[in-house]
Image 1 (cartoon, rainbow, N blue to C red):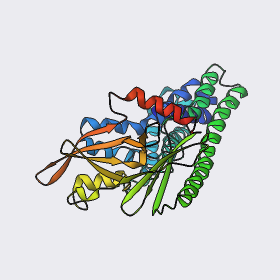
Image 2: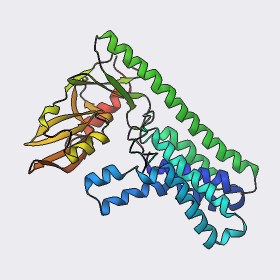
Image 3: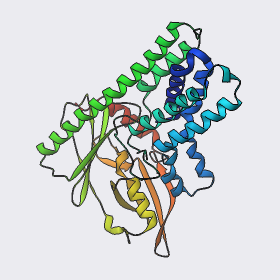
Image 4: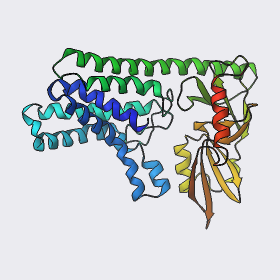
Length: 339
C-alpha cells in the first residue's frame, strides 16, 4: 500500500510491542521499520525501468528478509542505541520482524503482487481486496497514533488507544475481503446472465475506496472489463477488448515481454501507438466514459522494437495529461452508481 499506510502500521506495531518501555521512541522506530521494505524503490537509481518494475516488492518484501534483516538490525540497534538497558536485543528483533512482516502482509491485500517467498520463488501473492491507497484503512491508525503520542507511556489508556486503531483498521481490512467475495459473485452472476463465457476472472477495488470495483475476465480471444458500484441499479456493462497478442513477435521468448507477462499475470492486451506497441496491464482496470465504454488503460508500457527485441521506453500510469479532470469527474460520478 501507500507509504503513509505502511508507516503508521509500523508505528502502531512499534507502540504495541515497545511503547510501554520507550514511549514515543517506539512509535518512531516502528515507523522506520514499517518503511524500510519500500526502500527498494531506490533501485531505480541503478536499475533499468523494467528492472525496477520487477525488483519492487521482491526480496525486501519477503519472509526471508523480514527474519534476517530483523535479526541484523535488531542486533545493531541494541548494540549502539542508548536504550540497551530498557529493551533487550530479542525485543528489538521481534518488534522489527513484525514491523517488516505486517508491511509485507498488508501489501498482499493489493492487486500489485508481493514476492513473499523470494528468492526461492517469484510467485507474487495478490489478494486484491483493497486499493493501494484507501483512507478508511489509514485514518484510524493515524488518529490513534496522534492521540497515543500525547499520553504518558505508563498509562493503560495509551495502549488501549493504540490497540483500538489497530483493531479498527484490521476489521476494515477483513471487511474488504468479504466485500471482494460478494462483488466477485455479482460479476459471475452478470456474466452468466449475459451469456459470456470466460476462462478466468479477477476483481479489484478502484483507487481511494472499496465501493467501486473493477473487473477483468479472460476469454479465448478477448477480455471483458467492467465496473460495479454498490449504488448501481442496472446490470453491469462489459466492454470487450481484443487481446491482439499476435502483434508481438517472440511472445514466449523475448525477455522484456516475458517480464511484462509475469508482472501482469498474463492479463494484458496490445495496442499500436505511433508505430510502437503499447502493452496494457489489465489487472489495474481501464478508464470508461459516461456511457460505460472503455476509453483507455490505467497501467501501460510503451515498447520499442530494436533488432528483433523489445525495449521498455516508458511506463504510463494514469489518464492522458490533457484529460485528467474529465477522467476524475467521471470516476467520482461513477462511484455513486448508474441508475
